[in-house]
Image (cartoon, rainbow over all chains, first blue to last red; front, side):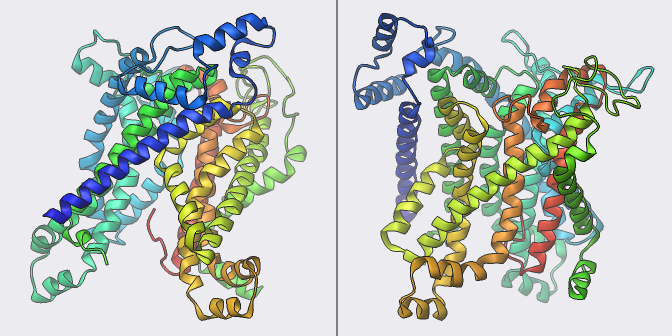
Length: 327
Length: 277
């Protein structure tokens, strides 16, 4: 038991260290910006005095490491600075949208997880059957399609419909734009975000299902399953009693890794559906070159991503004693 | 030649389909100026005209011919993704093999560096870097190549590690051959099959990545015809039930599927290395 705790503590420490290094990268990459930052924001025509005042306002006249610690201190106390374009606090901008992004990700996860597990386990059990091949081709196609393609195809068939020359056919099931504000009730919110959630599901199920299939196949090839087969146990008993408990570790890992992927994949889909999430905010700020907001949202995304990967790591250690004794 | 034909005949239908599609795309990419009815950025009519005999797929928001731009998109989008993937393999492959051959602190340093880069989701990192350096095609190519080379590095190092322990590499080292010679003459030929398969997969990834960025308006920018940004520019048509804006997106999906089919078969052929994903 102690070995597990040490290992988890090690992973946590490593995760914190990674976060720290990532914060360094996010902060200092800004100083790589060609030319003077203040001039870049204010434009070539700005008066020298204005530039100077702006630099002082941003604290750019201080050395970089001082600014870093000020920024880090701010991050830890929940102050990410002020947006250049809207003059609002970055924390406020991000906070409002972070919840929306998490809601969408959770919604997609709730549909995707059971679906992927069932499809994956079935594909592994009936390997090389017609079902397996069909699922393989379909998932390969959804993985290969750009997210915005899947999104627009769904919008077309389930929302606006197709123009066949004289009238619209199909469509009308869901709104094409995921317009949610704070006063929208829970079920209404679920209804309005169905299309983005389905799009995410399509992408993520493919990955999850293929990984689940691979790990179950891997497991079914192990000697003790062969032994169970030779003993003449029934197939259902082998699957449920012998295989599944051991398959849990890799499957948990698959889920956590894909959740990390989901959080990032949400960026493109939020833009397609004009969903007020963190991804949309990030993309907007990149095109406006609104540095504080970009830094803040990148940090939040990176932190969530690192934490989910860390969770995957820890869970796979906890659920697999063999990992505790690496050679 | 007969051996090659036999090899082709052994391919399943999915791989043949994939090869056919890739061949068509490459053909179009090379012969666009001859094939396209109009110029890449030529304004030929009113905006958003429907499909007819002159403008096969109608016109876009500025009145440029859609069909022409889709053809040109093959050259621009695939070309840029291809260059990016090549660069990523050049950086990542070289450093990976170097790590494997030299070992020691070089390996440690590069390994930790790659770990940190990979800890940040690549889309987020790319967006951060694009904010800093601005969005132009050369910058885009370099940023994505560098970010993607981390994945190539990992594979190249892993494959290289298995080769550097072989006696013939040992022998070459004792003969006093240089690092470059060992990488080029001993490691590279033996690492070819997994690296080629990885090239296909990385190309798909880069291709989708660049299309995604272009779709967000942060990648390849108009007036250059590019499939991602074409979807963005003409997305308004979708609300009228017109499928034209989906065609460039479909073109992206079709090529990626095709490459995946071929890679799947290739992996199956050359030992079952990395059977999944």
